[in-house]
Amino acid sequence: MKNYINAGFNVESFIYIFGIIIGIVILLPFLKLNWKKYGLLFVLAALIGNLLCYLFVTLHFYSFPYLLFPNLLIMPVTTIALSFPIMVLLAVRYSPKHWPWKIPFYWAIIHVGMFFETWALVNTRIIEYNFKWDFWHSYTWWWIFFLIFEWIGGIIVPENLRKPISIESLKFGKLGWAIIHFILILTIFLGGYYLGSLSIR
Image 1 (cartoon, rainbow, N blue to C red):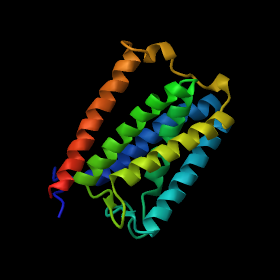
Image 2 (image 1 turned 60 degrees about the vertical axis):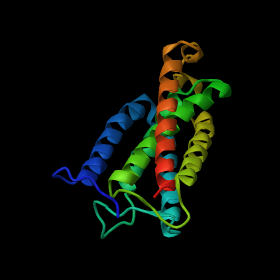
Image 3 (image 1 turned 90 degrees about the horizontal axis):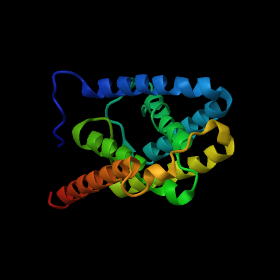
Image 4 (image 1 turned 135 degrees about the horizontal axis):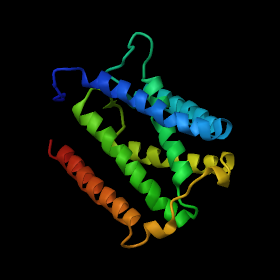
């Protein structure tokens, strides 16, 4: 039995609503920038993200024990549509031009995403892994999803609507290099701690 957070309020509802609000706030500037290109990318990411999630839920790979509208849905459709796709928009707009530099960029994004997913798994009723699904399955699908949409985004969004991070800022000793390494070192340590804790249960 998991020990869920008890902070005197429903943390799951707060996270869902907060995620929706932040997603809308971030989406609006992208639509203002170019609603056709970024809007199309957003719709595709939201559609595919929800379809994949629906498939995995119906196959009982994982589930969402707590939902805002449990009598209507089997998964948090709106939150999914305003979380993963927003991350896709940010990643496509700011990813470096060359693939050797895109990998550490996406590596950091995916590790941050997996950190929050694992935190939600351990501390809340938002998500629960079920039949033959674990940390590594989720991690793999994060990579698949974001790399596919980096490719799709490159087709949909022209260069003049992107603002790639300077490669110079990602080189050794620069701020981008420091941020990426901080994220990777911290999340790899925490991921190892989490996986190690599972092995001794």
